[in-house]
Length: 319
Image (cartoon, rainbow, N blue to C red; front, side, top):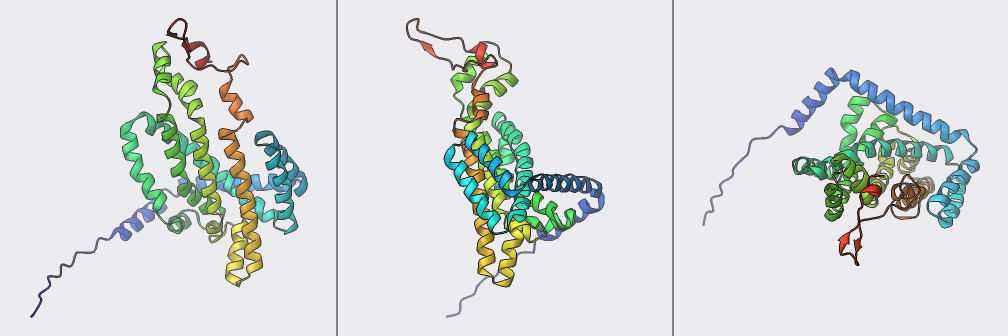
């Protein structure tokens, strides 16, 4: 018996060539823009690195421990002293500060981009539908792929590492900001609208403060993703702990690679616990959003059981 199979050969779709054409066009026509972005990022990273390395290691470790103590508690403060002392004893202090500066710059840029986009997506369904597939693409594309156009636009060094980190880490910030704004109790928003509060003040005085735990969770996640890009950024000359780990891989040096990995873990735990406390714990930032200008705690709309009516929330909600 002869089986005839019908083979259908589809024409090749030149997606890669199209993308290469877009990158080439951007390089030829928008070089001035990429030069400006590269200069700003490089100056920020170098300035922050210089500031972090200006103080003696244990003095800076003590200052970071005090910050941890005020925001999270004594446990994180003790861990900070011990963890950063271990980094210094492994002679990885400067590399760790390079990586910390890179992560901070990338996290700040990602936050300033992701939070407004998340707010816009939460307030407009059309924006949400447009943004969602873009975020899916950004979050699922292998991180190494981002380095290819970044090198074309910014050469090698810390700048392409920061740019690739920003793109890779933005999605959770956008998603959790949108989720937090949409998750605010509608009765709270309706109470503000009932007393004539403008939409922008409802956003800044009601929705954002109540959504702050979710927003901070998104910032926490983008910081963690930024740290996960440290090693990858080392492949394009960003240096820091990524360069240490990459050196261990190239030389098959288990000790060097493990020490670099331990330093990354210490930084990750510190930043994770710190940002987690800002979102959920009794921190000064949280107190700023939950207290009114006159120093009194901001009340929420409550029901007067005796009178059977809702108390006026307006004076403090817009305070």
